Image (cartoon, rainbow, N blue to C red; front, side):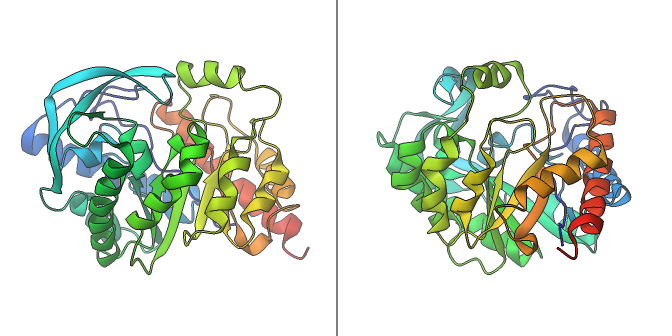
Length: 341
C-alpha cells in the first residue's frame, strides 16, 4: 500500500553535466561520458533504495532533456540546425530540432540505461518516455504539415521502444505528457488516442504523467496566472479514465488543483504528487502523510501511489535527496495512519 515513486528525472551530478539546468551541457565526451552516465545512474538507484523509495527509476541520467533524449535516436530529425520556438503554448522559448523527413528509429533508444537499472535493483522498475503530443510540441515540423499525423508517427516509434523496454524487464512504462495540461481540447480529441497507440500491446503497467512543469521560473510564473483553482485536469481526466492506460500521475501538493478532480479517474491507479518540485523547502513526513490523507477521500488506498509532482532534474542534488527521504517516510507514516481505515 502507498508504494512510492518519483515522476522521472533526478539532478545530474556536477561531474556529469551542468547542475540545476533544464538543458544541461555534458561535462565529458565519448566513452568517458558513457561511463559517467552509468555511474550517475547507479548512484541514484542506490540513493532511491537507501531513501526507501519503492519503485525505482534511472533518474534520466543519460538524457540531456526528457524529450530530446528520445529524439536523438530518431531518423528524420535535424539536430544540427535547431530553431528557436515557443513551446507549451509559448510559455517559454526553446531551441528545438526540426523534423525534416519520415520518422524512423535508428535502433534501440534506451537499452543501455534500462538494462543497467534492471540489473542493479530487485525493486519494481519504472521507465519514462515522452508522450507523442508533448514531442510534437517540442520539435519544429518541416515535413508532415499535420501535428496529428506527426504525433501518430512518433507514437509508433514510442511503441517500438516501449515493447523493447518491457522485454528488458521494465515493470512500469510511463509516458510524460505535460502538453495535456496546455492543449486540453486537443488532448481529449486526439492526444489520448495517440498515447494509446504508443502503449499498444504492452502487458506491463502503463502510466501517463501530467503536471504543471518543472520548478523553473517560466512555469512558476505561468502558475501564478492560472487563478485560484487549476481545473485543467477536469477536461482530460474523463478521456484518460476511458482509456487503457493504467496509471495517471498528477500534481497535488502546493498546487491549486481541486483534489476532488481525482474522482474523475475512477478505475485507475493514481500517482499523487506529494512532493513539491518548485520549492527547496523539504516536506516533513507529516505533510506528505496529510496530502495522502486528502487524496484518500477520492482515491481508494490500494490505487494510491505517492509520487513527486514532477521531475527533480533542475533541483539542488542534496535537496532532491532529502525530498526522496521525506517521500518514503511520509508514505510509511500514512500506512500507520490509514492502513486499517
